[in-house]
Image (cartoon, rainbow, N blue to C red; front, side, top):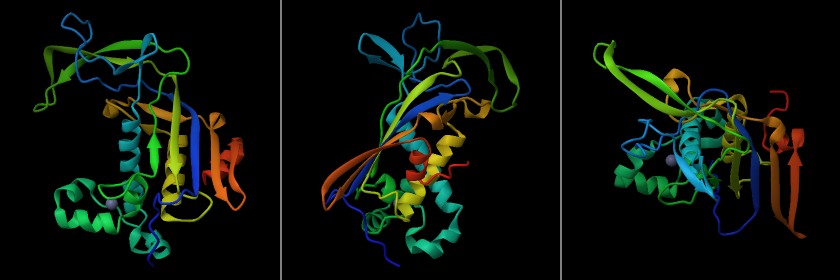
Length: 256
Ligand SMILES: [Zn+2]
């Protein structure tokens, strides 16, 4: 079976998915640097200027990277779906692809299921993720940790360092856009989007400190609103779905 490649030549349908994400454990998107030499924090969280003030941020690129890897794992662990979708139901190794000319060309012409959603060097991404900001109050905590000696596994005395985290139970904005993937059709692309939405609803880890349980975030199902914009014979129509209706559009089992 050779599935047509969805392109942007013609607009057909788009979805704007909005909601709130809550971090159940300390969340840490590092800025990778200390703000100043006199800073009390060795590893501050990433802050962005938002109007007058600076607020912590989960960059859209972090969402995209995380969900792309999730999609790869999903496709590789559901080989049986190849019977339904054909050869397209595979996940390339994107690092290998960019470093191998021959592979790159073939992935551009006949992209795998993951590239059909997230794009590659030859095709544009059909999903777009926006930066997340706290939508309620938030607080920052500094946690002192002892450096673990990588060789002995023991703790090196005196090697204390501190990391800044955003306290648990902070509510963040979440927004993503899906372009020209019809979620009402059964396709490899819609299958992946539905899986990722279900994953966000059950919880996923983002940012640093995964091994110590940091960054467990969950999309709040009651907060989800999906704006569906569709081109039909009558022209553009737009509809906003909430609650169970939103979950249905996203292809997520309402009971889960
Ligand atoms: Zn690919």
